[in-house]
Image: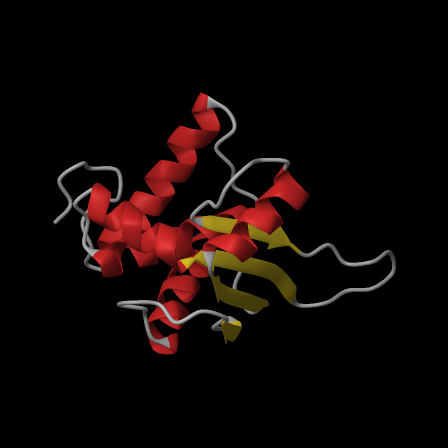
Length: 154
């Protein structure tokens, strides 16, 4: 079953993906790690909002490309909520330009990366990073995009 997506566009983004693209990428990630049939909120935000969230919840300065907020059911309550992703449109665009990546492919990577975090994957240590990057690469190349960790992706 596909994820139920609530897409919030808080800031217009140059070359922003469509809701159908977000749906396709999120479903591919959720299916790959067994987190399908859930609800997901995706918010496209600016650097000010993402900087504030990054500071408040991660105690880090500045905007980052994607923040993931997994939902934890209250005790005794079961929901189908996977969580929230906040993607910083200006950072994604800038990273794609700086890394000479296809903008659409970088958006796909950031969305997939965030969904994998919501499904429990992380990259805190080397073994986790290897596992998560391999899964990301498989999903992204399966969608027809270049491998995300290659420097020459366009």
